[in-house]
Amino acid sequence: MLSSTLALLAVVSPAIVELSTASTTYDMIKEYHGSGFFDDWSFYGNFDNLTEGDAIFVTEEVATSSQLAYVDSSTNHAIMKVDNTSTVAFNDKRNTIRISSNDYYEVGSLWIADMYHVPYGCSVWPAWWSEGPNWPSGGEIDTFEGVNMVTHNSMTLHTEPGCTQEDPTQTSTLINSTDCSFEANENAGCSVTDPSSSSYGAGFASAEGGVFVTEYANASTGISVWFFNRSSVPDSISSNSSSISTSDLGTPTANWPNTGCSISEFFSQQQFVFDITLCGDDAGAASVFNQTCTGSCYEDYVVGDGSNYANAYFEVASVRVYSVNGENTITSVSSDALANTYPWKASAGATMLAAVAFASGFSWAF
Ligand SMILES: *[C@@H]1O[C@H](CO)[C@@H](O)[C@H](O)[C@H]1NC(C)=O
Ligand SMILES: *[C@@H]1O[C@H](CO)[C@@H](O)[C@H](O)[C@H]1NC(C)=O
Ligand SMILES: *[C@@H]1O[C@H](CO)[C@@H](O)[C@H](O)[C@H]1NC(C)=O
Ligand SMILES: *[C@@H]1O[C@H](CO)[C@@H](O)[C@H](O)[C@H]1NC(C)=O
Ligand SMILES: *[C@@H]1O[C@H](CO)[C@@H](O)[C@H](O)[C@H]1NC(C)=O
Ligand SMILES: *[C@@H]1O[C@H](CO)[C@@H](O)[C@H](O)[C@H]1NC(C)=O
Ligand SMILES: *[C@@H]1O[C@H](CO)[C@@H](O)[C@H](O)[C@H]1NC(C)=O
Image (cartoon, rainbow, N blue to C red; front, side):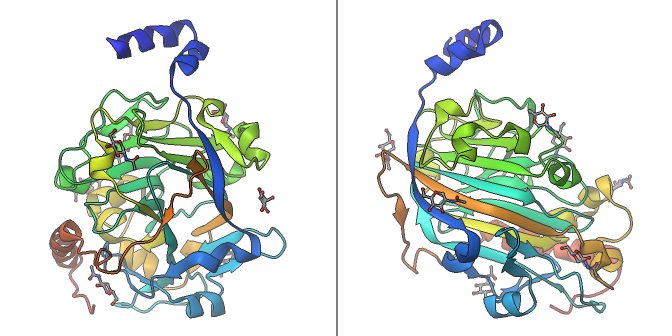
């Protein structure tokens, strides 16, 4: 009843819908930018044992010395990139970056990532996302993600069974799947594709990037993601305002209301992650890879010189975090709670790895 009324109003006047939708004001509590961008993150420092990528997520020391993570002094933007200067031998992996924020943010937070370039290319699988402790029980919010040469961003939640996307108020009509459970559809999650070709890849870069806004609310609106390309960034964001009202942002690109997914049940405090892996469970799966690229993900791209990776980098102007009512939503998590086990990824990853090794006829040294 409510949703059909809203749908009708949307045809008559979008402004009325905004007035009838609760808006929330958030105040800035934390900013990652400029020369201090990398101060409050941890570098993974291990090969990709999470998504079976052909990637080594280097330590901070290696990232700094080999210039895979640095702040560009001319733009003041943070760069995180895949190694595109080394030659990788068959059976080796390529160096790249995975960082996670030292702080966690409770429900009642909103975060804005302002970027000028996102990684893309065959074999490249980047994401800007967040997760709670003990995946999947703390939930996962993927604000930005894509694989290989796709041209549109995908926005996804992953949770324990019982969370679905129901009656979203969102501008995108490209709904890929509505069951957020890690057990459904091989952990595809509940996923929405951004219809804008400036949301990913070369289209994103040529539009000088844009901003991704993620709202993690305990209100009926639940979780929302907005994307604005550079020429559409709302004034309240481009002016570096210390507070943001969701009423200034319009209808989100993707939305997962509390109705189909009780946010307090399926999500706990979120830790941010930027990562770029190569091939792996998603980008490297034959049926995914061959949608936008040809050849063998590992042998034809990861192995050999780095010429494939000139576009495999994030260029980030800032990440700003806001919290509702000016409350401080920054929190920490005990190390016990951080013993991530990745039950799905461990089992399905092993199956996938076996299939990939069989299909490509070589054995893995790792
Ligand atoms: C991945 O490697 C790190 C470092 O060795 C280890 O702490 C972690 O338990 C491993 N995770 C998985 C899922 O194997
Ligand atoms: C999601 O749906 C869109 C639109 O139908 C499609 O173009 C895209 O390939 C799908 N994405 C995935 C990951 O299946
Ligand atoms: C930027 O976004 C606006 C609003 O969605 C759209 O009209 C415009 O075409 C986009 N610009 C580019 C370069 O894609
Ligand atoms: C979220 O909402 C639920 C239901 O109203 C409530 O029980 C819970 O305390 C709220 N959590 C926070 C962190 O506000
Ligand atoms: C944005 O504003 C905050 C204070 O509100 C300030 O610390 C920060 O330097 C500003 N950032 C930029 C990129 O201007
Ligand atoms: C892509 O891979 C899938 C799975 O291996 C296969 O069924 C499909 O025919 C392939 N499509 C193309 C265009 O090669
Ligand atoms: C490596 O990538 C950078 C952009 O990140 C590019 O400027 C440079 O030309 C690339 N180098 C090689 C050897 O391809």
